Image 1: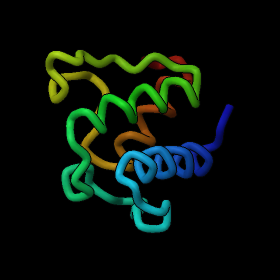
Image 2 (image 1 turned 90 degrees about the vertical axis):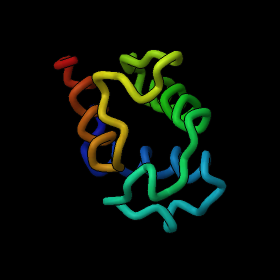
Image 3 (image 1 turned 180 degrees about the vertical axis):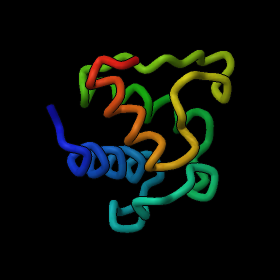
Image 4 (image 1 turned 60 degrees about the horizontal axis):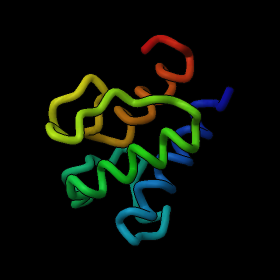
Length: 89
């Protein structure tokens, strides 16, 4: 299982790719709205996270802002991925 630091590094890399930024430009405590990630970018980032970590993120594409997986900030995403990887849904 990936460590929290490895998860954070992968989350930042995935977000940076969606935003066409260098990973160093995405702060570990960055808010997604502050980064300017649009709803399509969120969906693509979720698919990339699922593929990278072998998890299934609960997400409704018809209501991208209504879900059980926190996607408001890098720490929230990292915590959600870690929780799913630990099998705690």
